[in-house]
Length: 303
Image 1 (cartoon, helix red, strand yellow):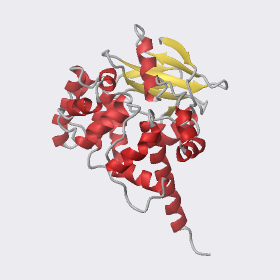
Image 2 (cartoon, rainbow, N blue to C red):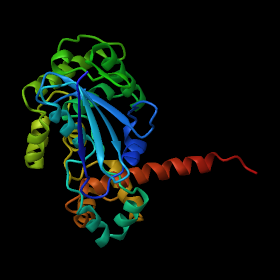
Image 3 (tube, rainbow, N blue to C red):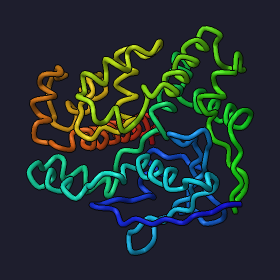
Image 4 (tube, rainbow, N blue to C red):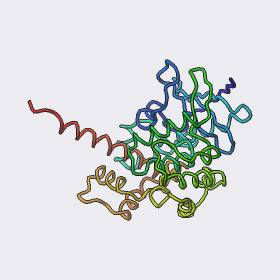
């Protein structure tokens, strides 16, 4: 068992507990409930790794990398990207200082940053697998794919399985729960990853429209999924997606009497720069929490 330890002090507010509670659902590593384990194919290699992370009392985040003995720092940096810890978030508080609605969201969801897929490749595969099925069904299928076809990484808290690497996914022709029509698209996603089309750093460095145009060349990634891969896979920091949920979240937060169009959303979001994606994430979380609260209220029995 090869283990390498890293540590980072987040620049700006960050809470691993909040990330896990709202987005993660990661495997708890051992008996310590504040340690989480994420296993994934490591970008730029043909291997997978598992990173076990915890946040220490001083706010720093420590990680142990299992596997990938020749380049553990690659896995560590990828894990930081998943948690948006590769971004200097010190200026995010300034957005709240000039926009009271954002400041209230920051207070309510203290230290919450966007949580991404392990890579643009995994994001694209997840969107293809999850098309026309529930989120829970998609997650279950991906877990089974990892268990049956992914690399198994031994850690001090047991064996963790990564999602199949692109080379492996290309060889799979059928799997229970995945419709036959999805396999050509999944193979196209795997090939795009091998060809460098789904490289995180390259996608981030491109103008947004160029990145979206490139992603739409991958079969199965239309306008909606390509936005998801760019925002939730590559981790762009200052992009506003064009979707109904974002519009509903803005309508709720800003107490608008109408559903705003994209032009109005972009106008409001000018005040969120250069963290428009981060603000959008908080708005989405708030919208979901309000919806859950309303449902619970409606379901309360009469006295």
